Length: 215
Ligand SMILES: Cc1cc2nc3c(=O)[nH]c(=O)nc-3n(C[C@H](O)[C@H](O)[C@H](O)COP(=O)(O)O)c2cc1C
View 1 (cartoon, protein in one colour):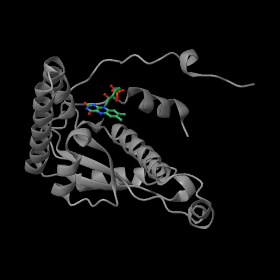
View 2 (cartoon, rainbow, N blue to C red; view 1 turned 30 degrees about the vertical axis):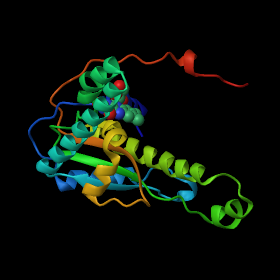
View 3 (cartoon, rainbow, N blue to C red; view 1 turned 90 degrees about the vertical axis):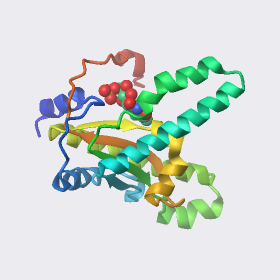
């Protein structure tokens, strides 16, 4: 394995919000999901599923529902006297939460329930942790799979943007629209397409700021 090539892929991946008017093929999508499914997961539980929307009209519907919910929340905030926050929600968060609008594909990343022999035979009987912790366990593996997917996309010359904006705002409507039932958690969406921008480098925290080595 060539480490420097892998590092280059990791360091040069950026969140892309402008996409060329070119579809993503089903072969591309299947290839990315193939990479996603090799992510690690707790007891190999593979708590991930992906719903990929490739119909631009449907992506537009998801954009509209996100804006609708955002405006509803802004009006609510306004009525509580939070005018400045309401304005910022619309002006700053709106475009951020809908940055998938010209992507030819939108991947909805789901987390499935975490089930394992450990949980069934040991953890649940003794009440090791609350159910919420197992929900988080599913999300953790789903995130790792999503990262695999984004790096694979970048290495194939495709662009992605991971996004929770539409989920925070319009999860209920998104679920209804795509028929995602309550057994699944909506982790994030990933805009996918061919890049139409080359963003500059974004700063990162220094290694010494985030690293503690315990000798
Ligand atoms: C959990 C999570 C949620 C994010 N939500 C959004 C979003 O709603 N809209 C958006 O445009 N970008 C979103 N991003 C992308 C971040 O803004 C981006 O990763 C960050 O600014 C670093 O830039 P880079 O990915 O280009 O390195 C999200 C990223 C993560 C990890």
